[in-house]
View (tube, rainbow, N blue to C red):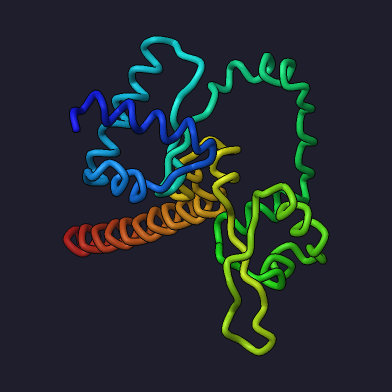
Length: 205
């Protein structure tokens, strides 16, 4: 199949499906490698961008989805009579962050981190499609494990959780480590200075 036709076929599949389609499924349908799928979609995205089209393609983990460009969201909402989603509360953001950075996690783990009951918040995040069950932990009672969804990636405009920004605690730890190293170096330098002074004084005597 010619490259042009592959690109057109990918467009047709993604448009018709509506939801995300795994790279492996696209490759199998088109009888090409997953690497070739990635290359063709990269070219499609460049074409959409250069032509200032109203659609683009986003990557969600190992899947692709055709979506509208976010700058046209107000017009789309007007035509489709869509209401703007209710913003997440601070509690919801906190729970979502704990899940995103530590997944898969149990509800008890989230509650241990936050220090309060999180049943209602986790239920709300699950209803919004931002969090989902990821199996059960092999411990007594087999508690549910939770992780983020493709919708989470879509909403935060990232293709993988690897693109999440580093936690502030990590930055502080790096600074603390740097400070410790500087302090240790200062102590060593101070010790050297004292030895040097003692050596000089001994020479004068």
